[in-house]
Length: 277
Ligand SMILES: C[S@@+](CC[C@H](N)C(=O)[O-])C[C@H]1O[C@@H](n2cnc3c(N)ncnc32)[C@H](O)[C@@H]1O
Image 1: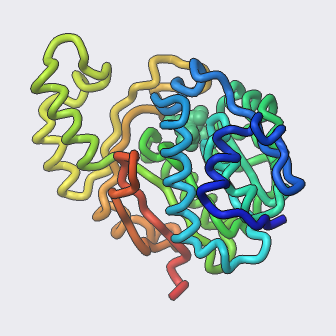
Image 2 (image 1 turned 180 degrees about the horizontal axis):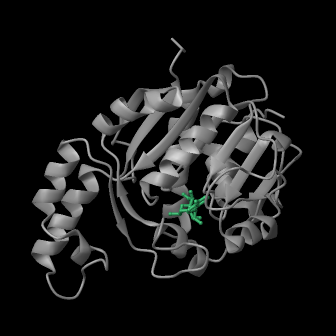
């Protein structure tokens, strides 16, 4: 179902679902998980966390021309507790929304919030136990900023196989904004505030050089948490030059990029089938 609501009101509905009795124009609005759990997924909580999700949602809608699509199928890969996918209840029937994550805890949270779209527990690598063919939009917010190249490769291959003709794949990764942030941390708080993976990264100027040379860069940082393992989960930097070179292997191509989504310090790429105009 598409509903008739302006974006400002919609942000309020999603941010304050209890004020609307978890219903708006006949659709179920999911609840919000406790802030102490939100922070585990994005380091953010409360309105700030939802504002970031909303800004990314708006960007995806524009990139995918979502208002032109009839009941689009949308997949959120690495959906966490479902903070982003819920915004798409405005644009399509809940049955066309798919939220997938490798972590059982994330999947359980999504169920607990009463999100009525499709909730899928996947493995760290495809295939997926459900037929997901014909996705008009696939997005991944802050997921390919963490995955090893082997996993990036396997998921790109899989997404190509389920992306509808003319479909858009939109994902984020780390780049200069985060590298610059790390340089500042290293300079100003050399002892006690270093993110735990910074030590592994060594000389950041060298990392920037590798990035500028189009290298896919990955540092493990999972710390043995739940299903996330050092073998595939860490801090990942994917440069544009890498994508320009590698995406054609999967029959995909780069359409657009930005690093200026408000409240979001990652680089965001839009990709489609290589034979689309
Ligand atoms: C930083 S969180 C972002 C969550 C969500 N996208 C958001 O923005 O709120 C990264 C998410 O990716 C999920 N993830 C990590 N590796 C994955 C994999 N191989 N397959 C699917 N999900 C994965 C994690 O479980 C986690 O929920």
